[in-house]
Image (cartoon, rainbow over all chains, first blue to last red; front, top):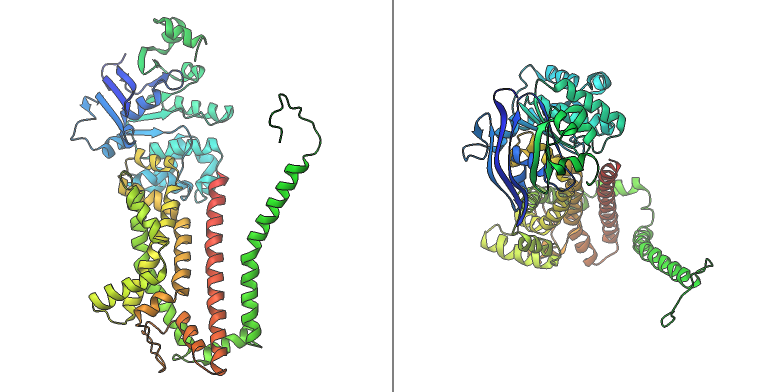
Amino acid sequence: MPSEPKLRVQDLSAWYGERRILDRISFDVPATRITAIIGPSGCGKSTFIRCINRMHELIPEARVQGRVELEGQDVYESSVAPEQLRRRVGMVFQKPNPFPTMSIRDNVLAGLRLTGEAAPGGDDDTVEQALRAVALWDEVRDRLRRRADTLSAGQQQRLCIARALAVQPEVLLMDEPCASLDPIATARVEDLLGDLRGRYTIVIVTHNMQQAARVSDHTGFFLDGELVEFEDTDIIFTSPGDRRTEDYITGKFG
Amino acid sequence: MTRGESRRTVGLGSLPRRDRRGRIFAAVCLAASLLPVVVAALLLGAVLQTGAGLEEPRVLLERLAGSGTQGLLGSVIGSLWLVSLCIVIAIPLGVGAALHLEGPRRRGRSLLALNIANLAAVPSVLYGLIGLELFVRALHLGHSLAAAALTLALLVMPIVAVAARSALRAVPDELREAGYALGATPWQVTRQVVLPAALPGILSGAILAIARAFGEAAPLLMVSGLALSSTPAQLGDPQHVLPLHVFEVLARPGDASQVDAIVGMVVLLGTLVVLSAWAMRLRHRHERRRDGQ
């Protein structure tokens, strides 16, 4: 593993009301690699990544304990503004959620507009760069002013990724980004992940083990709110250290 | 029916009983939906019949234009003034209340919400009394346009608030989350994501509020002190608005003024129909857009 981890999670627990979702999770997320989180439904994998950018606490009754360090700084320190944190740690959701009242172009710029910042290289450059990064530029360059909801679901999801990239985050969290896409659109997003590797630290939640095996460098297996195993993806899928991991990836449950 | 039988066979034949009930229910529903349409048509027909020759829009307009600022035309202008003023006050208040109730941290506000919803059902005469006591007397605004506009604003504010609230609630949480995930503050998310998405719903509520304010007579009678003067009213006089003008003219003896009243009614009804249709169209478009995704 490379020297310094981008994210260091220590004894992270999370609750909804009285119900404990995560139980003392600890592991390091290496920089500029793709880390997959796998596990059956309800194992807490979505809650886990929502704790990294402090989206979890937006839900009433939600509670967190433990540390999540971004380059050595605990994001739960009182001096950290969650809005600033989320600028550095972007997120892509399960269901494509472009802003329906905005044009394609405005959606890409939404992150900058919302927070009242100017695009570093000008609006046009930012739009083109972000859309090129998600291989959407050639498909939409002639209709940037059209509404975002005129795009297909797969295009909308890539637009959402472009929107997240436009604010130049360091970390990109993806919560089952292909769950609502067809196989072709899924393949395109997976290709895109390959392009983004090396530039961003990506944490992707997926219930699709093949996808984790295809795209990720490291994989964490969650079960009932616990981290069962965290290893290089090759190792997890060829010689897992824990019996439960083996049972899950061979399809005995889940 | 089949109670007591140990076993029931389900045939593939017709279901005469359930069929008949279904048809009766459908007929009742149809009748219920036709009733208001028929009543409205009869009303408009009766109005037009009484004022012979008024079916033609040209005649209506001439009559309106010829009436001068002291008569019917003046009352239409008065109504426009009053309603504009009222809406400028009521919409920010109503949308603000809705934003508070549907804001990012919604907890312990159900009592407040219930109260606002109840306000929408309070009879308008009561608002007239409040307006009389609060604005006319306590705040010394007198029988003025300002007092009337404030009273009407009080009356329509809950309508705006209830409509805005349901429009805000219909904005999917995924959009809010998308905003937060980009590093926006709750205020930025509300202003730039939630409000634009809820705008058509808020607008249709606002239009309904305008229609209500436009046609309301009872509270204005209170605020203007119940004194229907025989002298021609001036602009800025709270009683010189369309519904009160019709009311006043009808109370006056003589046939000549009746035509005036009928023209007033046609303008009033026509405006209300147009406003309602507009609100419905907005809401319909909004719903279709939401379902289309």
